[in-house]
Length: 518
Image 1 (cartoon, rainbow, N blue to C red):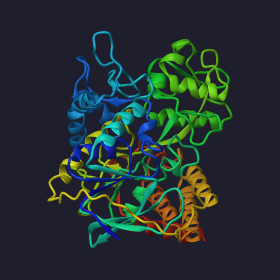
Image 2 (image 1 turned 180 degrees about the horizontal axis):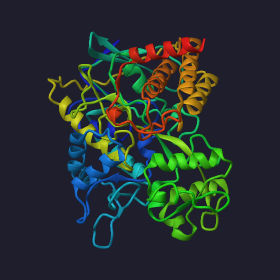
Image 3 (image 1 turned 90 degrees about the vertical axis):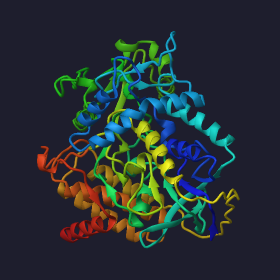
Image 4 (image 1 turned 45 degrees about the horizontal axis):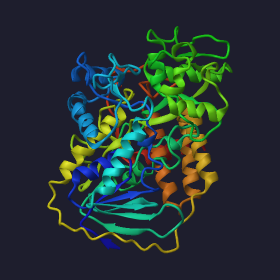
């Protein structure tokens, strides 16, 4: 066991690093599963950060679009707060050195994405916002003497006394090891979402719901776990994770066609390619299921400009042998963003004392049932600061001694076959389209896999989050936002409310489902 006066931040993405800088000069310990900046979902974000920066736009309009996209379950107070402070975060990142795209007059270049009523997404080099913001934050963190980063280390469990978090258990991330307990005055969870629980995902390989899972196992209340956003346009080129064909391409006029050259989004929704993501995702999924391979066509809208304005897309195309100037890009639906997570109040607090959460591991009420494009990075920034300011109110000791864990042999290596089985059952039964029978099958399979790998704490965390997703999806007998039930295809106004669930409640639903299948 190690005792420290440092605040421990589990995760090393945008929210984690932004919070660490906000807490400076208070001592912080950042737990990073890989080398700093690698494997973080934030770095993979292509679109940008949504903020009402232009003269023609307002925070109120941004909040209204957020409420509209969220399909009836967005918390209006949260939407108003987040959109109101968005501008100051863009300015702060700019002052830190983030090279946001500017025009000749120095104004931020704004792009429009799906379900936004105005162009309000601030970008960097077209499609490199996440990476460039992360590089800026990494440089600042490296220079901050108050921040210690433990690389190649992962959090696997919370230590609690009653309903108070007193520490966190960590292991090596690059090889099996026995866990080490780090006792700390407070813990901030900032470790990403759960897209990797699905077989086709845009998320980095390590992002498989572990943080949500170990928080739930410690008694943290989870909100909205059934609401998973599937990005409509991931590259369908056989790579895992699937590279992202950014939403900004459709914002610039790219269209969706099938292998027969038909624009299938025109009859699907009045906004066609710029319809909310869940609608576009289901339309693309339907084309795939029908054998009419969906394609993203940038040829007329962008022509050769796609190569210079969207370099990440161009690089992926080149790797796959696709010339987007003359060929459409094969696309498929992929798990992209988890609206659900550990429930957080306006200050990032959870129901457990001394535990805060920000970023995709959280559920703040901003996203509702269907996140508005480019609100993800914004939420991470806002709640990282809110949580950091709340944590700063603690009477923290000025303990700058470094945490130097000594790991011994032990632990269990993650079983790749079990992980793949979990991912496949989640895609088959808890993915874009769901039914009661399929969700019950998913829950029964998760229970079996969990029993088979009962000694693997990492896998237990994944199974906890998978159970929460499937159990909440089974309980919600309607379709709303990112949650679609073939057996309940309409939205029910009586169910226009957020889900709040504990792991104990989800396990009871799982046990009942498994029993019904025997």
